[in-house]
Image (tube, rainbow, N blue to C red; front, side, top):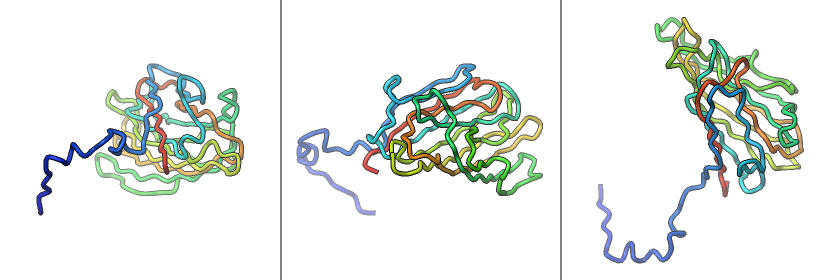
Length: 209
């Protein structure tokens, strides 16, 4: 492999730090759970933005630990600043799993976790356990939430330890859309039962995408 050689003018030729690429993903907000009923990102609240600044928004949920066995992270959206989280959604889900004892390994469509024009919360994990080291991590992309022309697509993938007594890993995939042409200006995360005991959710915007 050829070596790249720099002369003394290589760095001095840079006239401005702005000319050095800084990356397209910009951190907007981090929320940390501590026995929290929910974590909400609302436009205009605590420097959160859901507008045309970013055509793609990314949520990264990290080491989400729940306060009971076999519970799931869920999310929903709002077009009225978080007063109501009840937007119509149509989604599809599938999952891959593998148990520690190698007794099961499969990929399957999960019809019980998808929605058809439902205002209910959408599942983002699958049967999260409650052992001290159990957790779920993943990401959720939402595309052009400020549009008043199109429906709003979203895609998520996550992995989590499975329920107590049956240790293993589940890789959960979900995609769908908010069936509204109203701008989405708030997103809420919670467990389908109980509280988020601990963990972080980070919001990023992807510019020039």
